[in-house]
Image (cartoon, rainbow over all chains, first blue to last red; front, side, top):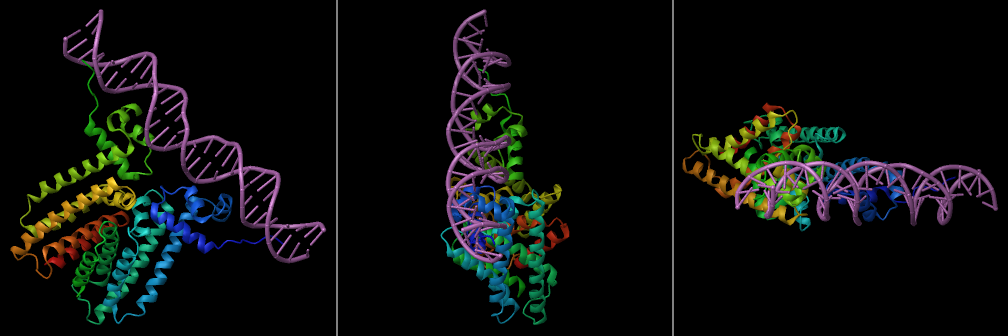
Length: 193
Length: 193
DNA sequence: TTTTATTTGAAATGATCGTTTCAAAATTAA
DNA sequence: TTAATTTTGAAACGATCATTTCAAATAAAA
C-alpha cells in the first residue's frame, strides 16, 4: 500500500490563508506559498490543483473559522443587541491584534475579484446571504424583546448592519485608534436602540 | 524647436484610471494600459515614469474629480442633512450606471495596497482626513440648525459616516438592487435625525 | 522483500511581467 | 532647410509568473 499524505492540510491552509490575507490574490505568487508552507511545489499542485482553487479553499476555511468563533461567542451574550455589539467587538479585537490590520479577507476579496471571477462572486454571494440571515434573526429577536426599535424591519436593519460591518473592516485598515472604532460601533448600536 | 507633446494627458489618465478601477493595480498590466490608451509603450514611460507613478496620478485625478462633482452638487442642497443624503445618492447613481459596479477606486486601493505601499497609504490617509473634515463640517452645521441630533458630537458622527461610506461602496459591489441601497441610506440618515 | 502509491527535488515550460534601449520618423521654430 | 526634440516602433532585457514534468526517494501494506 502507498505512502499516505503526511503534511497537515489544515495547517497548510492556515499558512496559505495568512499570505493571501496579507497580500491579496494577485500579489501572492506560488513562490510565496512555497516559502510560507515549506512544502514542495509539486505537493501543492498535487493537493490543491492550482492557485485559484487553493485560494477558494482558503476563503472557505476563513469563513468557517470566523463563523465558529462567532457562534461560540454569541452563545455567551445576554441578548440580541449585545450579540450585535459583540460582532463589532470581535472585529476591534482582531484589528488590535497586529500592528497593521489587514482587513477582512472576504471584503478584500470582493474588492479585488468580484465581477471578474464568477466562482468567487458566487462564494461571496452565498456568504453574504448567510450573514444577512444571521443578522436578520438577531434583529428580529431584539425587536421582540423591545431592545431594538421597530422604525425599520429586521430585513432592512440586517442590510444596514451588513453594510456597516464591511465599512468597519475597511475603516480599521487605516484607523487603528481603538477609541475611534468604539465610537463608530456605539453609533451603529445607537441606531437600533 | 522641438515637437510638443501631442496627446491629451487628461484623456490618457481617464482611460488608464478606468482600467485600474476595473482590475485593480496588481491585475493591470502595462500591456492593458497600452491597449486602453492606444499610446506607445515608450510614450507612457516618457510621460509617467512607471506603473506605480501612473497609478498614483490616477488616484489623484479620481479624487479631485469626485470632489469636483461633490462640491458642485452640494451647492444645490437646502441644508446639511440633505447634503449628507446626497453623498449616498451620488453613490447610488454611480452604482446604477454600469451593469457591474466596480466600487470606489480609493476603497479598493486601500484594500489592495494599504500597509504595503507607504506612498499609497499616505495618499489615502490624506484623503481620509479631507473627507472627515468635510463630513464634520456638515454635521456641525446640521446640528446648529437642529436637523441633526446631538447625541454624539460632529467628530464622532463624521467617523460614523466615513465608515458607512466605505461600507456602502463595498455593499454596492454585490448588491445592485437600488431599493436595498436606498434602505441602507435612509437608515444611516435616520441615525442623525 | 516486494509492491504500490505518494512525496520530493529540481529543472524546464512558455507566457507574461515591468522596464529599457535606440534608431527612425515626425514635428516645429529658427 | 536646418536644428532641436519628442514620439514612435519594435525589439530586447532579465525577472518572475503559474504550471508541468519526471525520475528518484520514501513509506507502508502485502
